[in-house]
Image (tube, rainbow, N blue to C red; front, side, top):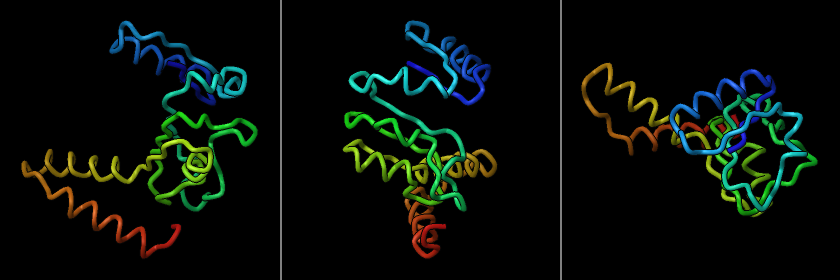
Length: 141
């Protein structure tokens, strides 16, 4: 597993944290500007964007370098939820990769918070439906 971050020290900290949980997993930390040189498209299974890049109102931005191909065999998980289909997800789909947006994560965080504070499990399907409806009525925002 290769962890990239704009700040190399943060990549190292995340890799160290993951190492504590994934003892046998090979991990390395890299500054983001090394992404192109480290990219081996045959060996990329998962790409996760955990930054706000691409979040409304900056919907034309992507954290993925424009000149680096998205591996078609990869799954791209963009934690951004507004817009529901970010530029990164659109580029991933165009490359033939599987694309997953952040709305499901947002809803499940809300579910966990609601349950923690109230002691009651909320209806996940209702929450997902409402958030999806809100996104559709707002367009790309």
